[in-house]
Length: 245
Ligand code: NAD
View 1 (cartoon, rainbow, N blue to C red):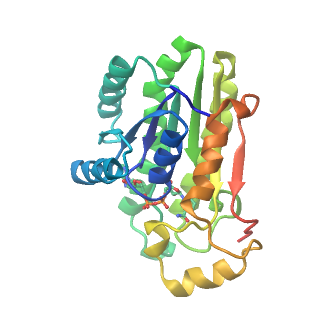
View 2 (cartoon, rainbow, N blue to C red):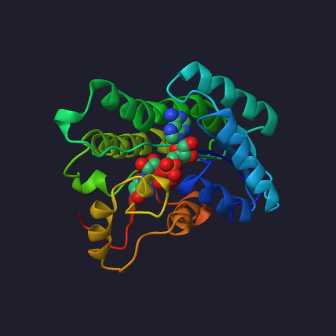
């Protein structure tokens, strides 16, 4: 489905991002993953190599435009183009507002929103040159419903939806599609970090009766990245088992 496409996946070292990397590779793409640190990036590349999955990795500072531009330029020099950009790196929060510091709020906005702006800004000139491209952003079910604590996280994901819908309109004349996937509760480290007493009752309320697996989410990214979605842009696709909390 993605034969010979060049794809960049941020937050590709574990969880949903790592599964997107694997799924895209299985479907013929050349994939470059971004991690937060040298060690975790190299570790992910080594793990994939053991399964005969060959990818390259970089670890730009995503909230620093210059650092991102340097790496994106290098990738285009090497691969000739970027067809698909997946903005998946993200952190969450679950503290009440009176326990949340200004710095913690800023950290979430820097990674979940500003980093997305930076990678898109660095990549779009190349996509415009090709008159083709796909940008996919990881949103969340909290971008629709909010959540009862950790206000920075839903705030950032509402922003992701705004950025997605607006850029879909701005970039459509250049044949660049921009969509987001909004996962529900998904079986990754991000959820493992949260208290069991908080997560288990939520899983029980999911109409499909189970937590989402990273592959459930990666398959939605695959569809939106592929030509099967050639007339879809500006969409926030919920992949959440009909969870509504
Ligand atoms: P995860 O914690 O397993 O992975 C997060 C990824 O982001 C990692 O690859 C990590 O390297 C990267 N990252 C973290 N901090 C970074 C930084 N400062 N700079 C660069 N990269 C950084 O989490 P996940 O569940 O796989 O989350 C992936 C995306 O899915 C996030 O955007 C998250 O908000 C979203 N999401 C997750 C769930 C869920 O239930 N797991 C639900 C909805 C949305």
